Image (tube, rainbow, N blue to C red; front, side, top):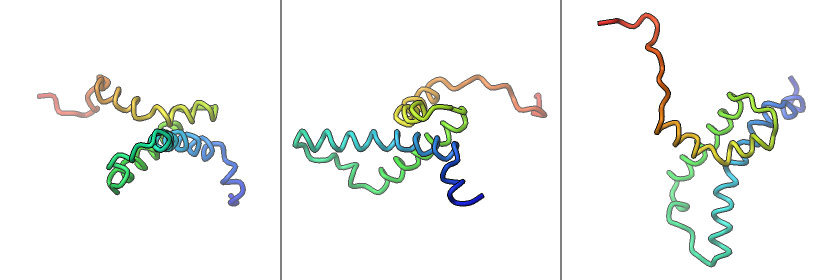
Amino acid sequence: MSLEEFLRHPDLRLFLFSLAGSIAVECLKIVLNYEAGKPLPSRYYRKGFWVSRIMLALMAGVFALSWRIEHYGVAFYTGVSFPMILQGAMRNPPDLPPPTGADEN
């Protein structure tokens, strides 16, 4: 696969649209603070915040791929809403069956 083919691959584009949606949230927050004349919150000056935010953005891209989303707009919105999706999943984890071959005591 050539670089050009790779860059045109629909899955890569889907991943990047979701990633962009996730990053857009922080960009909007920064712009709103700037326009209101407010200083940026201290979290924006911490490496840990940016590492965790980038990890969330990457996970949003993987999430969009795993759901086989077909439209770039939906992938973008998935990236925007991914932190809320993740919080909802943490509050209400699914009931999973026990693994096969588990010891029954």
